[in-house]
Length: 384
Image 1 (cartoon, rainbow, N blue to C red):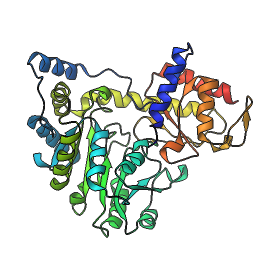
Image 2 (cartoon, rainbow, N blue to C red; image 1 turned 135 degrees about the horizontal axis):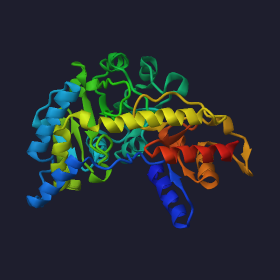
Image 3 (cartoon, one colour; image 1 turned 120 degrees about the vertical axis):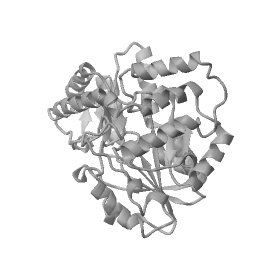
Image 4 (cartoon, rainbow, N blue to C red; image 1 turned 60 degrees about the vertical axis):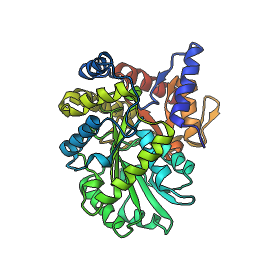
């Protein structure tokens, strides 16, 4: 199993900082905002109310109800408590799903680029990742034709994210419907829809595969509070999906970690019950930063970008630099390029190879405007 490329780059950046280097980190997908005050107050109340015991494996009943209310309010999806499982982060939700649904040799479709852990989580469960390639020219979106071509008798699952990490791509309802029209012909394929960036969406319209009546019983929605509420370290994720899958995930989680943190669960109730308007200021800030970083990247030769419609990443194609020698370093691939930027510009990014696209790098703009401006200035100086 490979080490997570995002975590590996973050560790390398920390190592260089400890050596005294001024590293600007644009590698991690972590909002730079503080947790909203009303969420922190809820956590403090939970401490003072003596929440300290083991929690139910699949989450507190009132948290599950808050998840149900959120799904109904934001996504027009109806679930019962038996269809909800709360986990220690959306990453555990994804791991649970892979472990309970995949048998040895089952194929997992991954529209590329995809989040780094999808592939290795699938492999760990015995699955075989099958990439469906895209390109920046198609806005990193798969088509019904490319989806159909990737399906075999061994295909058991498809995992996708929208808004997408790392590309920021957002699938419209019409585009998802076109993909669903292919999938309905293959009833054994389970769709895992990773919607962790749901609220960081600049199209103002979020679509989910689960809203289609003919896909509802075959789609599992994965979400959490890390991105929208800046609660990365609180580690709360959840799923909504078919009851038989939820029961299996509950059983699996009961043998691995049991229930998620009690204080974080209580705070999450308050977060999910609040109006999304309370976090709109973060979304507005990310949109402004997107404009800033795209304008700055446009000034650097060799960076080809799309306009990401969600999340807080840009995923430029930097293949222009392949074969070139910069300051004595020959760039053969995106990994070389990302490492060159770390060592020569003191800016941490992540190679696109880890996301299934060897022509790109991921740059996070979950950083202050000051750091974005300085980081892009350094990159430009290191390349021009």
